[in-house]
Image 1 (cartoon, rainbow, N blue to C red):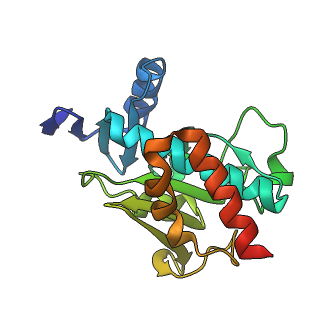
Image 2 (cartoon, rainbow, N blue to C red):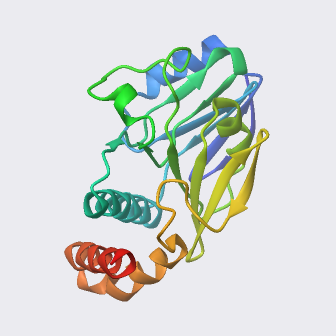
Length: 209
């Protein structure tokens, strides 16, 4: 095991085999807020900062409010660990959701990507550049859609032919201008969470009526 990068909010470990990754998942499982990403022997351990957690929670609530207003069935599984040994890939997103495949996993409490579909939507908060790129990991896990929030911008990426391409429209919410969400949040941020959620629901009704 070799540490190649160490910062206040993250550590990078090299030459980690799959069993060591599994062992670390067990060891760190009870440590609140820690995020792991594993890519073919390289492991990143992150401790998110408060600003990161704020946007993770707020944008996660936005996704739920969109679904509620549009009467879409969904499942939200937060920072669940998604891993696939055959791909030597593992990651804990900031949040993740099932929409298209919700009926296939409805009520499930245990998941195995050897038999279950991956989440349909993953949320990544990118306030500081991650040392270990997540997109190649998500591509091997076959996650179809990623929303990446960075510097006040929300970008949609869709998986096509094994790589993520920027997209103007979400597969899940094709009729909504998703890129406007950060502006909605900032307009109501100092008024509190409830005000943000009310603004989002009003915005949805305006855009679908």
